[in-house]
Length: 423
Image (tube, rainbow, N blue to C red; front, side):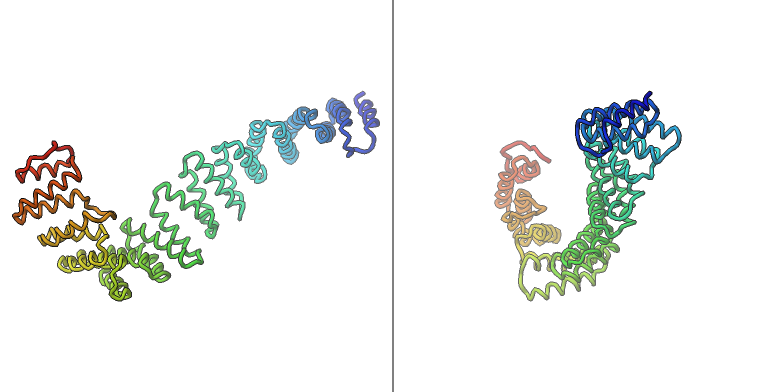
């Protein structure tokens, strides 16, 4: 009976199965229903596919239902190929109807049973990405990392990182990125992403090591030197002179400028290689041909640190004076000079340097209020209480709530104008 009805409808449809006449869709739907009832599921799906192509809204629900039934049938008999074909098609149909969550769930079920299906995993990743389902995206990308190769593997690693960034969990992408970095060490995208994660996690050691490796892949000398210098800086900050010296030395060879001289000198000092540090700085000073400049100031400052490390305080003072004369606006140098001069009881030099500090606007460990207060204490030591009070009052105007100033004024027999407020 069903076969006769199918024959009748087939005659009405004619022989041209590819005709694009939308009026054919109702007949195709009826024939599909009859074929389903007769147990001809594959033929029914063919009719529904043609109807869907002509009138998607009219045929979508029936096609989705038929595909779902076909999936169950394929699973029951262990027909993996048919199950996969029907599943991927059902995902397409569901997505066209806006049923993206259901489509993703169906695809997730397939990929959970068939973990090696790269195409299906890619589709699942893309669907979850479009929906902002970042936890699911991360899980799928991690699976793809271990299945993909080449550019596709890099894409999976970047997708993993992006998902974990969206989740606020950058550490979750670290292992996957490191895995791809080891397999594809020349990938600039993966290495850049790892740098970002190391920075976010505060893993300075790994960041520095990665920068050294990145520099070897860089062709531009200036960029390469910058990477090496940054790595060396990090190693110096970590107290690892052994690791710091090679990249800083290479950076200096590439770009023999102040930006590379100073960090290399710092690494030498940290390592206790005082002769190397001194020779490096002396050559840099000689290259300046006696000119006084901010760069020469920094060189002398580092030479003073060498003298300090060697316990030669007289030489340290001499070098700090040279540095200060080269650039009186360098607050770090001025502070070191003032501290050392005071400790050596070089009162006049200390007072002059502190006065300079009150006039500079650059970074300085000694504030204006402290500089005034210390000048007052120096005047007091020298028996000049009049000037001691004058400097203390100027310090008070600069920082009215610092109680150390009030205590000093009381010591000088001068009652403070406001009660102590800060320690």
